[in-house]
Length: 186
Image (cartoon, one colour):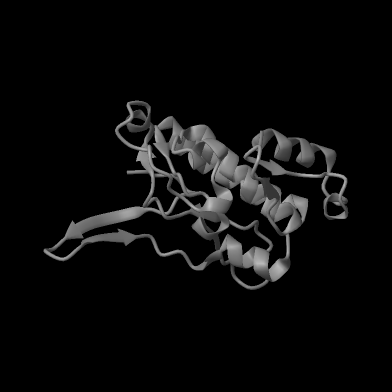
């Protein structure tokens, strides 16, 4: 079991003749996707708070050889705080339904099929190969959505994302954030 403050806790599992049931931590909040839809994008300081927690959760997972394989704003919950609270938003990574142990990936027993949400899939994941670096790449797509409110476009010929940092939508993004974005999506 994964036990990290930025990961939704699994309390219990049980099954009957019809299904397997998961009892998960209740998170009073909304998906990061909804936050992007409502706000358009986050300012850089808010995005940094969110991404710091996402990277902390990923680091924890990867240290335990767990690859999420479906990192996207829909699978990141932003917890609500009391009205008027000035505390920073807290996020929780959810939906480990496609997660796999990376040791299984390297042995070829799993991970050979394409899984995850196409818009956030790393190039290698689109080819059926997935590893911890694939989650990091997906985090770069999340960061892009947070900073500018939309995803970059794909160049089908090169199977890479196209980011023109000279565009007006990047005017408020700092040089450091641009470097991070390009590094994550390399």
